[in-house]
Length: 579
Image 1: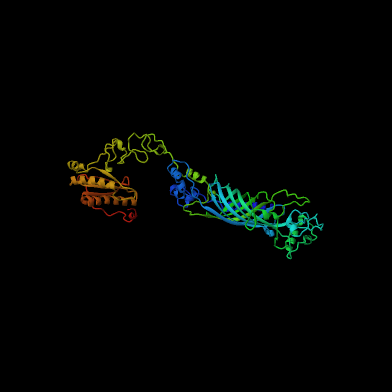
Image 2: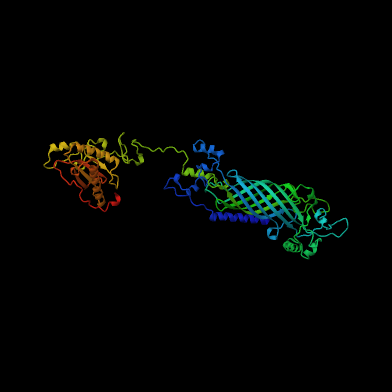
């Protein structure tokens, strides 16, 4: 018994070491750069207990109503998912704990084998049905003479001390072979899967208690190969029968004895309820401890120790009566111990079934949801905006904007023509660049070129000035620009003698100069092809100072001339990839 306990502790320590060395889970994915709702299927293993809690494929029909309430925020808890079954098999050391010392596996003693099937009821409890076939063997190392009340020996022709015939007593050495079948229904409680500081574990510990049916038959080895009683005194010889010499004595006995257990341990077996070839049938409660190590989501290995308590039976080891001159029962009943190792397999469609729940941590989903919410109802964020312009104070570069004034992304009033006077105070909303600087009302003063005709200037004043804003790195005419240029085309068609100056800004470097040329050319080409305005009515200017993303247009001054066709592009090879 001591050896088995030590072995169990060593194996548990080894499993714990394996968990520390190789069972550390990988760190969760870096979610700082993307939306958790768009995690990949691999990342999803870190959310919702190795499955997606929001995926209804894992929910059986009888729990779908609860899942729908959860999805609709009408119930706080998701439904329990459908989980796999676990089936297992294994073998180990099978011992009878009784009056006769048992033989361990390495002493050519007992052994056992088992098959089981297990189903989780929840994250902590599960039910298991297990069948155990066991062979228990025992062999004492001391001779005995007081066995009159243990009939297996008297039936075999041995004479105990104080026999009625007055024959010299014959020494025996107690031994047995017990064959058993045990079917158990166990309630198992898991004690290591609910974690507060990590998502999951690779090793789990459990305890169990159960009730089962137990059928056994115990026989005793009483005769040698010739059918005669053993001379145990001669076999042991002069070796002192002490505890220190027990292994030496047992080896001598095993070498001399046959493997034929010829006599039933007690004649009462013939009158007891029997099954499986005259085996006595009885109830057998049991309890035990175990540990499992997970290799992957389908396979785990297990070590377990089961302690069984047959209901008051003291004949498992072949010895019912105490060695005395009066019929006194031995003070304790016999018990069973089965220390085993096994391998378990999880069965079920992984697209519809999660792992057995005793491998999952129910807190994992809650922690993930708190850190990266997908299903949690969150209040709208409230950020202070003192001037009510729609830009929070912490981002507002122009606090105190008057109510109703349009602002840009930085919270500053819009200034369409860039003359330094915001639109809400600008009396000339579009002031051409050459007419700036402006006065306090945003009105510019354009000089009349030498020799110009004021009357002609007034006649072309029906063509308004404007600014076309291009997206960065683009020379394409968008929908908003097309509407603006349609108005300009209508004004030019109404004033067929007037020319329009198209001026592109941007002269900070070669790229800006080439982009400025591209944008002016795109506008003139669009006006010609879409609206039928002759190129000769435009004056082509580019590479001017100002906002590099803008192109302005205005009516030409009387006598103002310039190239109507596009001049050669300044740096044609620079901007091919940016068009």
